[in-house]
Length: 88
Image 1: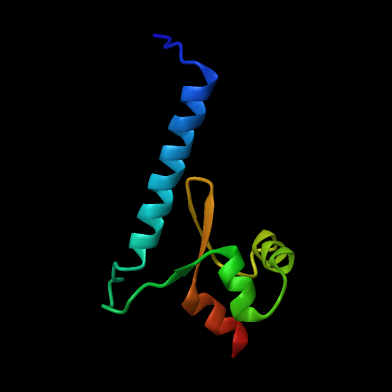
Image 2 (image 1 turned 90 degrees about the horizontal axis):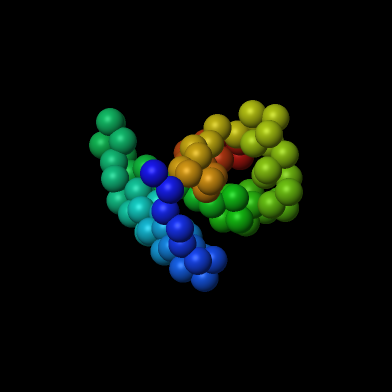
């Protein structure tokens, strides 16, 4: 079945879905992992500030699999504990 939708409404729908995804990602930080420690997820931008390097450097490290990450839809999230391992 095909549904026709005009471009403006499609953009609004995409924005609402994106906002919902961001809301869910932010609330993911409130969940706990299996060992009852808080799981803190960071964006690439937050990770770059935390590591004091550029966002491009963080993205390259992700591409090279030097940093473990989670992908939620199109959003990349990095556990703070993974960044702490790099700093040590």
